[in-house]
Image (cartoon, rainbow, N blue to C red; front, side):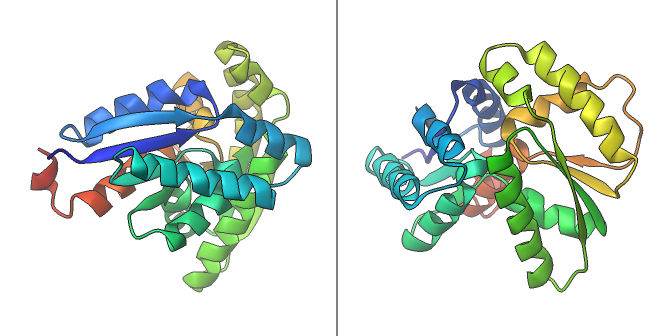
Length: 226
């Protein structure tokens, strides 16, 4: 029987991104996608991840399991803490989208630039990086960069405007840090949109790292995914 991965999104724009990565990284695995835009809309409205939204995310993870998922990837960083809670509650793999990226970031440098287009994503990402740094006894300095308006542009379908706004913001941030993390999966494509991106510092994105984390949990050896 084929292994199945479920992806829980808060925006439809992420489906093609994770669909392509999942097919490339886990060609033998089946996949399905669940989208609930109200999760991010309510989080933005409330300016935080509420207990109600957390319960709803956990409920969606359970529904994904009942739908046949062997592992679940929660692709929205704003609801990342709910994904982390779900991973502790369930006995099957539940992957927080930015977990692997955060682990790599604290190993990559002391000054970490954190780029986001939503305040509700910036704050949990900062908290996650601090948690990873403390767990590995690393001294890090976090430099925030919030590009307001870019998220609304990409949700409205204006990827060009989103990328232009974010590129300008990233260039300023890159001059100040050792490594940059893009807090949202929706930001990942901007790296390819930077024609004059300098060779350093590295820019870390979450989608591929999250899918690879799911692959590691589902397929302990590379031969299993061929």
